[in-house]
Length: 94
Image (cartoon, rainbow, N blue to C red):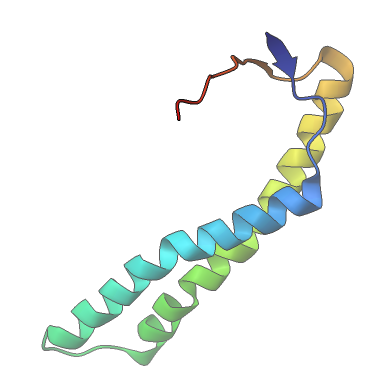
């Protein structure tokens, strides 16, 4: 059975993806910070501050670009149709 996505809720989609971007980048930033603390040498505080801001920046930019992308998708889907998906019902085994 074919289904078509004719509209995407821009604000809800942007909120969800912003949280996902934050959650995805946070472990990498934690590991990077720990790695920086273990390695001897000169570390600038501005780089450390930037590395801690990275998950927030990813979330912010992810929110803005997803909001814009969902809005553009909706405009395109109005004119030429949305993405088509093919689905199938699955029988659950007990």
